[in-house]
Image (tube, rainbow, N blue to C red; front, side, top):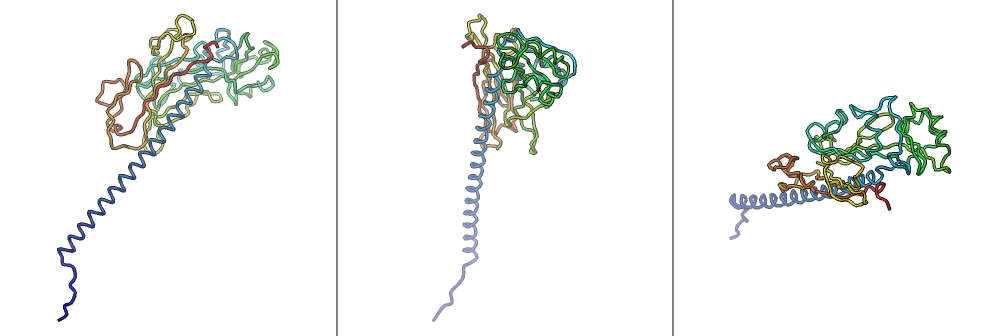
Length: 333
């Protein structure tokens, strides 16, 4: 007697479905975990690239600080006044200070301590700022190019004779004919016209479409006004310590923060500290405290650090970067 084949029972079918569901859940978890790991790894790679770019900015500008065409800052005459430039209280008088080629401002609430009001927007409380001034050796103008229309390239110029003296002026206000007569001569006589550069590095928030992100930014002289350029996103905080040569032996005697410095001409090097973060949330909560300077740290909301990141940001990856940069225009070879 032949028996007809029987199908699966209801119990067997349910057991099979449960096993299949468990397998699918396991596969989905593996996929999600792998995808998250990949996104975090990509975030780490972008963070490392941001660190490299931010470091390059500090090196590039600080190594050019206090260059005034081969003359000392004390031998630079400033022709101030005239047509206005600036933002807020960061006016032409604040910009045209060759004696303060490097000046630091300690982080505070609202704006860094000592920085004139109205210079910065969307400032991240607690982060330091640094102003860097120099005559740009890569941006020269001939006497023929030095006209009032040169304002398109920037209004402030230094006319300097190597080893002699220089004059810092605004092309819109200066007596250009008189300037070109003294000191006389062009490149063959060691006389050059340099465009002045000022850069104020700071941290501000910037919304790239997914909410505000802390961003390394630079207030700079662009044509006839001060404008802000966003440089590197994901830089959360910034701090500086300054290497002082108090006995004029061309050696750094000690590092001090901005509030303790009375003579910025004694600064020979700058210790730059910043914390970079990734752009993807990790599965690990960050509870570390990052030592920015000898007396200041950056940590979670529960820490005693003066600067803290919020609980909502605690799952971002972070790296502390500390680098010392020599002001080579102040160090005699």
